[in-house]
Image 1 (cartoon, rainbow, N blue to C red):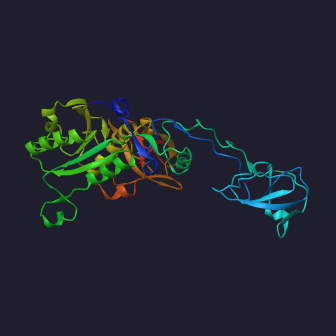
Image 2 (image 1 turned 120 degrees about the vertical axis):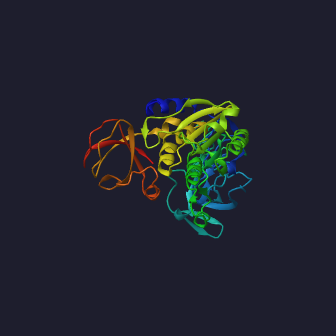
Image 3 (image 1 turned 135 degrees about the horizontal axis):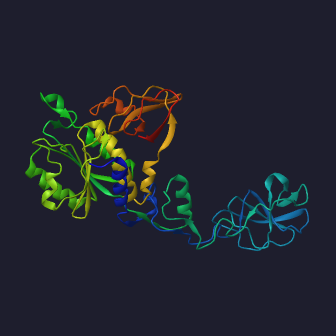
Length: 391
Protein backbone atom coordinates (compact mmCIF):
# COMPACT_ATOMS: atom_id res chain seq x y z
CA UNK A 1 0.00 0.00 0.00
CA UNK A 2 1.32 3.45 -0.96
CA UNK A 3 0.42 6.96 0.11
CA UNK A 4 -1.66 9.36 -1.97
CA UNK A 5 1.22 11.48 -3.23
CA UNK A 6 3.04 8.46 -4.64
CA UNK A 7 -0.15 7.09 -6.21
CA UNK A 8 -0.83 10.50 -7.77
CA UNK A 9 2.74 10.68 -9.12
CA UNK A 10 2.44 7.25 -10.74
CA UNK A 11 -0.92 8.18 -12.25
CA UNK A 12 0.29 11.47 -13.69
CA UNK A 13 3.30 9.73 -15.22
CA UNK A 14 0.94 7.58 -17.33
CA UNK A 15 -1.31 10.47 -18.37
CA UNK A 16 0.12 11.04 -21.86
CA UNK A 17 -1.94 11.89 -24.97
CA UNK A 18 -3.39 8.89 -26.79
CA UNK A 19 -2.97 10.56 -30.18
CA UNK A 20 -4.52 13.13 -32.47
CA UNK A 21 -7.00 13.28 -35.32
CA UNK A 22 -8.31 15.68 -37.93
CA UNK A 23 -11.92 16.77 -37.43
CA UNK A 24 -14.18 19.20 -39.31
CA UNK A 25 -14.06 22.67 -37.82
CA UNK A 26 -17.78 22.44 -36.99
CA UNK A 27 -17.11 19.38 -34.79
CA UNK A 28 -14.10 20.80 -32.98
CA UNK A 29 -15.82 22.77 -30.20
CA UNK A 30 -14.55 21.77 -26.78
CA UNK A 31 -11.58 19.83 -28.13
CA UNK A 32 -7.89 20.52 -27.46
CA UNK A 33 -5.71 21.59 -30.37
CA UNK A 34 -2.88 19.19 -31.15
CA UNK A 35 -1.12 21.41 -33.70
CA UNK A 36 -0.79 25.16 -34.34
CA UNK A 37 -3.75 26.66 -36.14
CA UNK A 38 -2.35 28.76 -39.01
CA UNK A 39 -4.29 31.37 -40.97
CA UNK A 40 -4.70 30.74 -44.70
CA UNK A 41 -5.03 34.43 -45.57
CA UNK A 42 -5.00 37.99 -44.31
CA UNK A 43 -7.77 39.35 -42.12
CA UNK A 44 -9.29 41.51 -43.39
CA UNK A 45 -8.49 40.17 -46.86
CA UNK A 46 -8.68 43.75 -48.17
CA UNK A 47 -9.16 47.19 -46.65
CA UNK A 48 -12.77 47.35 -45.43
CA UNK A 49 -15.05 49.94 -43.95
CA UNK A 50 -15.53 49.98 -40.20
CA UNK A 51 -18.74 52.03 -40.47
CA UNK A 52 -21.72 52.68 -42.69
CA UNK A 53 -21.12 55.83 -44.73
CA UNK A 54 -19.40 57.11 -47.87
CA UNK A 55 -15.95 56.28 -49.22
CA UNK A 56 -14.17 59.43 -50.47
CA UNK A 57 -10.76 60.99 -51.05
CA UNK A 58 -9.66 63.20 -48.18
CA UNK A 59 -8.21 65.86 -50.51
CA UNK A 60 -11.50 66.41 -52.30
CA UNK A 61 -14.04 69.19 -51.77
CA UNK A 62 -16.98 69.04 -49.39
CA UNK A 63 -19.45 68.13 -52.14
CA UNK A 64 -19.30 64.75 -53.87
CA UNK A 65 -21.11 63.00 -56.65
CA UNK A 66 -22.39 59.51 -55.80
CA UNK A 67 -21.00 57.00 -58.32
CA UNK A 68 -21.79 53.60 -56.83
CA UNK A 69 -22.14 51.34 -53.83
CA UNK A 70 -19.95 48.82 -51.99
CA UNK A 71 -21.47 45.97 -50.01
CA UNK A 72 -19.79 43.20 -47.99
CA UNK A 73 -18.96 40.50 -50.52
CA UNK A 74 -19.78 42.75 -53.47
CA UNK A 75 -17.47 45.73 -53.76
CA UNK A 76 -17.36 48.70 -56.13
CA UNK A 77 -15.20 47.77 -59.12
CA UNK A 78 -14.18 51.26 -60.19
CA UNK A 79 -11.83 53.84 -58.75
CA UNK A 80 -12.92 56.79 -56.66
CA UNK A 81 -11.68 60.07 -58.07
CA UNK A 82 -11.71 63.56 -56.64
CA UNK A 83 -15.23 64.81 -56.06
CA UNK A 84 -16.71 61.27 -56.15
CA UNK A 85 -18.23 59.18 -53.35
CA UNK A 86 -19.26 55.54 -53.03
CA UNK A 87 -21.99 54.48 -50.64
CA UNK A 88 -20.35 51.87 -48.38
CA UNK A 89 -21.45 49.60 -45.58
CA UNK A 90 -19.66 48.06 -42.60
CA UNK A 91 -17.35 45.27 -43.72
CA UNK A 92 -17.49 46.22 -47.42
CA UNK A 93 -14.26 46.61 -49.43
CA UNK A 94 -12.96 50.17 -49.66
CA UNK A 95 -12.80 51.16 -53.36
CA UNK A 96 -9.49 51.99 -54.99
CA UNK A 97 -8.66 55.69 -54.66
CA UNK A 98 -10.64 56.23 -51.44
CA UNK A 99 -8.73 56.78 -48.22
CA UNK A 100 -11.53 57.66 -45.84
CA UNK A 101 -15.06 56.66 -44.91
CA UNK A 102 -17.25 59.52 -43.79
CA UNK A 103 -19.93 58.16 -41.50
CA UNK A 104 -23.46 58.68 -42.72
CA UNK A 105 -24.40 60.84 -39.73
CA UNK A 106 -21.93 63.49 -40.94
CA UNK A 107 -23.30 63.94 -44.45
CA UNK A 108 -26.38 65.36 -46.13
CA UNK A 109 -27.85 63.94 -49.32
CA UNK A 110 -29.30 66.00 -52.15
CA UNK A 111 -30.25 63.44 -54.76
CA UNK A 112 -26.99 61.95 -56.00
CA UNK A 113 -24.93 64.62 -54.31
CA UNK A 114 -23.23 63.92 -50.96
CA UNK A 115 -22.48 67.01 -48.92
CA UNK A 116 -20.19 66.98 -45.90
CA UNK A 117 -21.33 68.98 -42.94
CA UNK A 118 -17.69 69.49 -41.85
CA UNK A 119 -14.30 68.92 -43.52
CA UNK A 120 -13.01 65.31 -43.22
CA UNK A 121 -10.97 64.81 -40.06
CA UNK A 122 -10.32 62.30 -37.29
CA UNK A 123 -10.46 58.51 -37.79
CA UNK A 124 -10.60 57.19 -41.34
CA UNK A 125 -12.95 54.36 -40.30
CA UNK A 126 -11.01 51.92 -42.48
CA UNK A 127 -9.66 48.58 -41.32
CA UNK A 128 -6.42 47.99 -43.22
CA UNK A 129 -5.76 44.71 -44.99
CA UNK A 130 -4.14 42.26 -42.53
CA UNK A 131 -4.70 44.59 -39.57
CA UNK A 132 -6.06 41.65 -37.55
CA UNK A 133 -3.60 39.01 -38.76
CA UNK A 134 -1.59 38.02 -41.81
CA UNK A 135 -1.54 34.81 -43.83
CA UNK A 136 0.70 32.31 -42.05
CA UNK A 137 0.04 33.75 -38.60
CA UNK A 138 -0.43 31.22 -35.79
CA UNK A 139 -3.83 32.10 -34.34
CA UNK A 140 -4.03 29.33 -31.73
CA UNK A 141 -1.28 27.25 -30.13
CA UNK A 142 -1.39 23.50 -29.38
CA UNK A 143 -3.10 22.73 -26.11
CA UNK A 144 -5.70 25.48 -26.43
CA UNK A 145 -9.23 24.30 -25.75
CA UNK A 146 -11.60 25.34 -28.50
CA UNK A 147 -14.15 27.14 -26.40
CA UNK A 148 -16.64 29.70 -27.77
CA UNK A 149 -14.12 32.52 -28.24
CA UNK A 150 -11.36 30.28 -29.57
CA UNK A 151 -13.80 28.81 -32.09
CA UNK A 152 -14.19 32.29 -33.61
CA UNK A 153 -10.44 32.52 -34.16
CA UNK A 154 -10.38 28.94 -35.45
CA UNK A 155 -13.04 29.71 -38.03
CA UNK A 156 -11.24 32.91 -39.06
CA UNK A 157 -8.19 30.82 -39.99
CA UNK A 158 -10.22 29.50 -42.95
CA UNK A 159 -9.25 25.88 -42.30
CA UNK A 160 -11.91 23.27 -43.04
CA UNK A 161 -10.35 20.81 -40.58
CA UNK A 162 -8.25 21.13 -37.43
CA UNK A 163 -5.95 18.69 -35.69
CA UNK A 164 -7.13 17.94 -32.17
CA UNK A 165 -6.13 15.45 -29.50
CA UNK A 166 -8.15 12.28 -29.61
CA UNK A 167 -10.56 11.73 -26.74
CA UNK A 168 -9.50 8.64 -24.79
CA UNK A 169 -12.07 5.88 -25.16
CA UNK A 170 -13.34 4.49 -21.87
CA UNK A 171 -15.35 1.39 -21.03
CA UNK A 172 -16.90 1.29 -17.55
CA UNK A 173 -17.64 -2.13 -16.06
CA UNK A 174 -19.79 -2.34 -12.94
CA UNK A 175 -19.57 -5.67 -11.12
CA UNK A 176 -21.78 -7.28 -8.52
CA UNK A 177 -24.53 -9.92 -8.37
CA UNK A 178 -26.73 -7.55 -6.40
CA UNK A 179 -26.65 -4.75 -8.97
CA UNK A 180 -29.57 -4.10 -11.30
CA UNK A 181 -30.28 -1.37 -13.80
CA UNK A 182 -32.11 1.62 -12.27
CA UNK A 183 -35.82 1.03 -12.67
CA UNK A 184 -35.56 -2.71 -12.06
CA UNK A 185 -34.01 -3.01 -8.60
CA UNK A 186 -37.34 -2.50 -6.84
CA UNK A 187 -38.63 -5.65 -8.54
CA UNK A 188 -36.05 -7.80 -6.74
CA UNK A 189 -35.97 -8.56 -3.03
CA UNK A 190 -32.24 -7.93 -2.70
CA UNK A 191 -31.51 -5.87 -5.79
CA UNK A 192 -29.59 -2.60 -5.61
CA UNK A 193 -29.74 0.07 -8.35
CA UNK A 194 -26.39 0.22 -10.14
CA UNK A 195 -25.56 3.91 -9.82
CA UNK A 196 -21.78 4.09 -9.72
CA UNK A 197 -21.12 3.44 -13.40
CA UNK A 198 -23.47 6.31 -14.29
CA UNK A 199 -21.38 8.70 -12.23
CA UNK A 200 -18.10 7.35 -13.60
CA UNK A 201 -19.37 7.65 -17.18
CA UNK A 202 -20.39 11.27 -16.54
CA UNK A 203 -17.00 11.99 -14.96
CA UNK A 204 -15.33 10.48 -18.01
CA UNK A 205 -17.09 12.90 -20.35
CA UNK A 206 -16.44 15.85 -18.03
CA UNK A 207 -12.68 15.26 -18.07
CA UNK A 208 -12.18 14.81 -21.80
CA UNK A 209 -12.89 11.12 -22.29
CA UNK A 210 -15.47 9.37 -24.42
CA UNK A 211 -17.44 6.67 -22.63
CA UNK A 212 -18.00 4.10 -25.39
CA UNK A 213 -19.49 1.41 -23.19
CA UNK A 214 -21.07 0.94 -19.77
CA UNK A 215 -21.52 -2.66 -18.69
CA UNK A 216 -23.17 -4.19 -15.64
CA UNK A 217 -21.91 -7.72 -15.01
CA UNK A 218 -22.50 -10.37 -12.37
CA UNK A 219 -19.66 -11.97 -10.41
CA UNK A 220 -19.04 -14.72 -12.95
CA UNK A 221 -15.28 -14.91 -13.49
CA UNK A 222 -15.47 -16.51 -16.94
CA UNK A 223 -17.89 -13.84 -18.11
CA UNK A 224 -15.77 -11.09 -16.56
CA UNK A 225 -12.61 -12.36 -18.28
CA UNK A 226 -14.33 -12.31 -21.66
CA UNK A 227 -15.65 -8.81 -21.03
CA UNK A 228 -12.19 -7.65 -19.92
CA UNK A 229 -10.55 -8.81 -23.14
CA UNK A 230 -13.25 -7.24 -25.32
CA UNK A 231 -13.09 -3.94 -23.40
CA UNK A 232 -9.31 -3.73 -23.78
CA UNK A 233 -9.62 -4.23 -27.53
CA UNK A 234 -11.97 -1.23 -27.79
CA UNK A 235 -10.87 1.21 -25.13
CA UNK A 236 -7.83 3.19 -24.05
CA UNK A 237 -8.95 2.95 -20.42
CA UNK A 238 -11.10 0.35 -18.71
CA UNK A 239 -12.65 1.36 -15.39
CA UNK A 240 -13.92 -1.43 -13.14
CA UNK A 241 -16.12 -0.62 -10.18
CA UNK A 242 -16.50 -3.01 -7.29
CA UNK A 243 -14.84 -6.35 -6.65
CA UNK A 244 -11.67 -4.69 -5.39
CA UNK A 245 -11.51 -6.26 -1.92
CA UNK A 246 -10.58 -9.79 -0.90
CA UNK A 247 -13.97 -11.50 -0.81
CA UNK A 248 -14.76 -14.80 -2.50
CA UNK A 249 -16.44 -12.96 -5.38
CA UNK A 250 -14.13 -9.99 -5.73
CA UNK A 251 -12.83 -10.56 -9.26
CA UNK A 252 -11.91 -7.04 -10.42
CA UNK A 253 -8.24 -7.92 -10.79
CA UNK A 254 -8.63 -11.62 -11.49
CA UNK A 255 -10.67 -10.82 -14.62
CA UNK A 256 -7.52 -9.32 -16.20
CA UNK A 257 -5.06 -12.08 -15.24
CA UNK A 258 -5.32 -13.88 -18.58
CA UNK A 259 -4.35 -10.71 -20.49
CA UNK A 260 -1.20 -10.07 -18.48
CA UNK A 261 -2.27 -7.55 -15.86
CA UNK A 262 0.64 -5.47 -14.51
CA UNK A 263 -0.18 -3.51 -11.40
CA UNK A 264 1.02 0.07 -11.05
CA UNK A 265 -0.33 0.21 -7.52
CA UNK A 266 -2.75 -2.05 -5.66
CA UNK A 267 -3.97 0.01 -2.69
CA UNK A 268 -3.68 3.59 -1.51
CA UNK A 269 -3.51 4.73 2.09
CA UNK A 270 -6.53 7.03 1.89
CA UNK A 271 -10.03 7.24 3.27
CA UNK A 272 -12.40 6.65 1.59
CA UNK A 273 -11.13 4.52 -1.28
CA UNK A 274 -8.27 2.39 0.04
CA UNK A 275 -9.00 -0.47 -2.46
CA UNK A 276 -8.42 1.76 -5.54
CA UNK A 277 -5.86 0.28 -7.93
CA UNK A 278 -4.23 1.03 -11.27
CA UNK A 279 -2.80 -1.40 -13.79
CA UNK A 280 -1.90 -2.06 -17.43
CA UNK A 281 -2.67 -4.84 -19.88
CA UNK A 282 -2.37 -5.15 -23.67
CA UNK A 283 -0.99 -1.62 -23.78
CA UNK A 284 -4.12 -0.18 -22.16
CA UNK A 285 -4.79 1.29 -18.71
CA UNK A 286 -7.12 -0.22 -16.12
CA UNK A 287 -8.41 1.67 -13.11
CA UNK A 288 -10.17 -0.24 -10.37
CA UNK A 289 -12.54 1.81 -8.22
CA UNK A 290 -14.28 0.69 -5.02
CA UNK A 291 -17.90 -0.40 -5.28
CA UNK A 292 -19.20 1.98 -2.61
CA UNK A 293 -20.60 5.04 -4.40
CA UNK A 294 -18.84 7.76 -2.42
CA UNK A 295 -15.54 5.88 -2.45
CA UNK A 296 -15.82 5.38 -6.20
CA UNK A 297 -16.53 9.02 -6.95
CA UNK A 298 -13.83 10.34 -4.61
CA UNK A 299 -11.16 8.03 -6.04
CA UNK A 300 -12.44 8.72 -9.53
CA UNK A 301 -11.94 12.43 -8.95
CA UNK A 302 -8.48 11.84 -7.51
CA UNK A 303 -7.19 9.38 -10.14
CA UNK A 304 -9.49 9.07 -13.16
CA UNK A 305 -9.82 12.84 -13.68
CA UNK A 306 -6.07 13.57 -14.01
CA UNK A 307 -5.54 10.41 -16.03
CA UNK A 308 -8.16 11.44 -18.60
CA UNK A 309 -7.05 15.08 -18.63
CA UNK A 310 -3.57 14.01 -19.70
CA UNK A 311 -4.68 11.29 -22.12
CA UNK A 312 -6.91 13.87 -23.82
CA UNK A 313 -3.94 16.19 -24.44
CA UNK A 314 -4.35 18.48 -21.47
CA UNK A 315 -2.18 19.08 -18.43
CA UNK A 316 -2.94 16.26 -15.96
CA UNK A 317 -1.76 18.35 -13.01
CA UNK A 318 -4.65 20.73 -13.71
CA UNK A 319 -6.98 18.12 -12.22
CA UNK A 320 -5.07 18.38 -8.94
CA UNK A 321 -5.39 22.12 -8.46
CA UNK A 322 -5.31 22.34 -4.67
CA UNK A 323 -6.06 25.58 -2.88
CA UNK A 324 -6.53 26.91 0.62
CA UNK A 325 -10.00 27.77 1.93
CA UNK A 326 -11.53 28.41 5.33
CA UNK A 327 -13.85 26.18 7.28
CA UNK A 328 -17.29 27.35 8.37
CA UNK A 329 -17.83 24.37 10.67
CA UNK A 330 -15.91 21.86 12.74
CA UNK A 331 -13.87 19.04 11.24
CA UNK A 332 -12.75 16.00 13.30
CA UNK A 333 -9.16 14.89 13.75
CA UNK A 334 -7.92 12.31 11.25
CA UNK A 335 -6.55 8.86 11.95
CA UNK A 336 -3.65 7.01 10.38
CA UNK A 337 -4.95 7.38 6.80
CA UNK A 338 -5.07 10.52 4.70
CA UNK A 339 -8.75 11.50 4.56
CA UNK A 340 -10.83 13.33 1.98
CA UNK A 341 -13.94 14.91 3.47
CA UNK A 342 -16.92 15.90 1.35
CA UNK A 343 -18.14 19.44 1.91
CA UNK A 344 -20.33 22.19 0.48
CA UNK A 345 -18.89 25.59 -0.42
CA UNK A 346 -21.03 28.25 1.26
CA UNK A 347 -20.61 32.05 1.31
CA UNK A 348 -19.31 31.83 4.88
CA UNK A 349 -16.86 29.01 4.11
CA UNK A 350 -16.72 25.23 3.79
CA UNK A 351 -19.30 23.12 5.52
CA UNK A 352 -18.29 19.44 5.83
CA UNK A 353 -21.20 16.99 5.74
CA UNK A 354 -21.98 15.06 8.87
CA UNK A 355 -22.52 11.95 6.72
CA UNK A 356 -19.09 10.86 5.48
CA UNK A 357 -20.00 7.20 4.97
CA UNK A 358 -18.36 5.59 1.92
CA UNK A 359 -21.70 4.19 0.77
CA UNK A 360 -23.65 7.46 0.92
CA UNK A 361 -25.21 8.69 -2.29
CA UNK A 362 -27.57 11.50 -1.38
CA UNK A 363 -24.85 13.89 -0.20
CA UNK A 364 -22.86 13.35 -3.40
CA UNK A 365 -25.32 15.59 -5.22
CA UNK A 366 -24.65 18.35 -2.69
CA UNK A 367 -20.88 18.01 -2.26
CA UNK A 368 -18.76 20.28 -4.45
CA UNK A 369 -15.49 20.24 -2.50
CA UNK A 370 -13.05 17.63 -1.20
CA UNK A 371 -11.14 18.64 1.91
CA UNK A 372 -7.74 16.97 2.15
CA UNK A 373 -6.53 16.11 5.64
CA UNK A 374 -3.18 14.47 6.25
CA UNK A 375 -2.75 11.58 8.71
CA UNK A 376 -3.12 12.48 12.37
CA UNK A 377 -4.15 16.08 11.75
CA UNK A 378 -5.90 17.66 14.74
CA UNK A 379 -9.51 18.73 14.65
CA UNK A 380 -10.32 21.93 12.77
CA UNK A 381 -12.80 24.66 13.50
CA UNK A 382 -14.49 27.66 11.87
CA UNK A 383 -11.92 29.98 10.32
CA UNK A 384 -9.19 27.37 10.00
CA UNK A 385 -7.61 27.01 6.56
CA UNK A 386 -7.73 23.63 4.87
CA UNK A 387 -6.49 22.17 1.57
CA UNK A 388 -9.28 21.70 -0.97
CA UNK A 389 -10.04 20.33 -4.42
CA UNK A 390 -13.13 21.05 -6.50
CA UNK A 391 -15.28 17.92 -6.52
